[in-house]
Image (tube, rainbow, N blue to C red; front, side):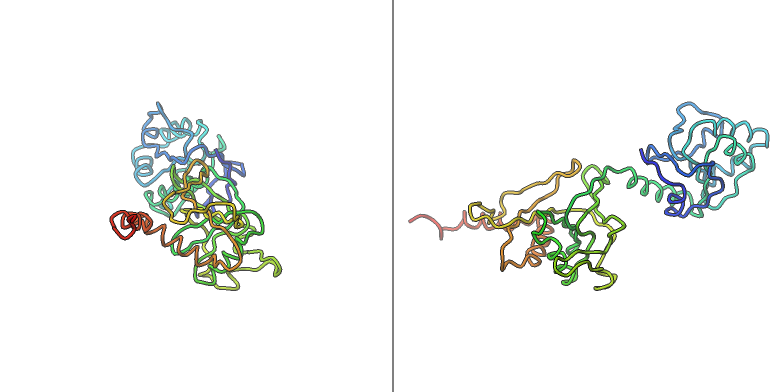
Length: 309
């Protein structure tokens, strides 16, 4: 469930308010929409009244050309007696007065879009999917590295922001720094973005706050990005055995979604930005079916160069 201000809902979907229902917010339970053709014909069994109702050209033609005023009053009286979130009318169609009168009696918002019905339904469902998605905020940085959404995590001061800055200088795009807002947009996909108040800003210790977009241009930032790979930066531990071949895969689970994870040790002299670029390219190659570590392992097994004497 989500509660959203009517002015925000209408602004982001470019809707016109015909009647606000005498309220400031809309309670939305589902991203599914309903086109109430059967209800306008008088059939209210199994009416999905918890959904936003969309009236398009077909429904409006039926209302205006087959119903007289008395019938419209009867149908809309029953229709708006249900606690529907709102009605959206497509194509800038003009609603009959009986519809608006019933909406006023029951306090149901009536909105209007200039879009054709199919486009309106697509845009609204996409918007509601994001609005209702499970979400969490995590410390870290999110970068679009060659098309791969890379989430950098690690303890404070490990160098996440500095690595992200170097990647931006190398032509990649910043999504978020310091705090990443993550939402689950499907059962196996996450999308990250920056909280609006700190979008495009980055903190560099010893320098202060910088604005990446102002400093490096509009192409250096992106509003949101699907998360493909988690990179955990940690201080180099000489007592720890790090994976040198890449045959063993690590995974991180966020909001129930499994993501590939790499643990990258940090110490002076390591160029983390180049390592991140290589990790992104290697991720894409693996997705295409090529695994360098497995090929090397196969070659070694098939070669007699390493046979014991």
